[in-house]
Image (tube, rainbow, N blue to C red; front, side, top):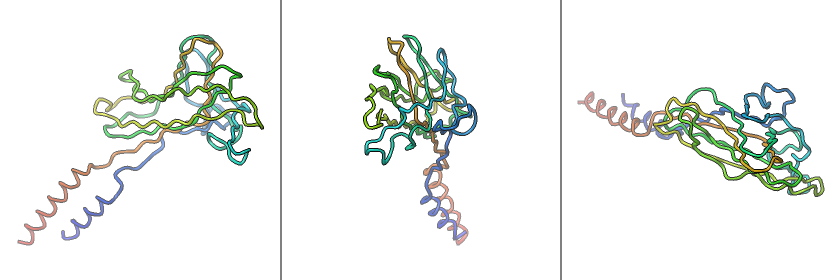
Length: 222
């Protein structure tokens, strides 16, 4: 039993979370299903398709490196709003949320319209409770225009959310929303990634285990 205090100390030094990827796509696959495709995306009134627009090519250093996923023109998720009003695109995640589980939603968006500012946001959404958990700012930017083959700057986003007790067992969704009184607006996403950290035994529980172990060891010695 003498080794248990040292084992406990080792556990306390071990990182408390192990990151896993719940969803990731750079939309570079030509097929509609499989890795890096648009599989799973649904819509209310407008289609979600894959685009290979040449506007996915912004470089701030004359073509040495490119924004977004770093690959010029490899494909993007294209969400096309065709009339004025509200448009919604969603992707449901497999499984349900656990208390304390941390989610990081990141990616990069751009606007390929000729001139119209495309207003849209991306969020993590609790489907069960019908409530947005965390939402980005406006991702729409007016297209810059072709300058030395560098067309559109990317808008990167990074959203962090930690599940609460009220989220236990609820379904998580990635949601893109566009609300604008102009029919000419589109949402383009160069890549979207959702990573989660699965909580392990809490620090308090480990400390309690340590005290119990030490107490048991001392009793054995007596």
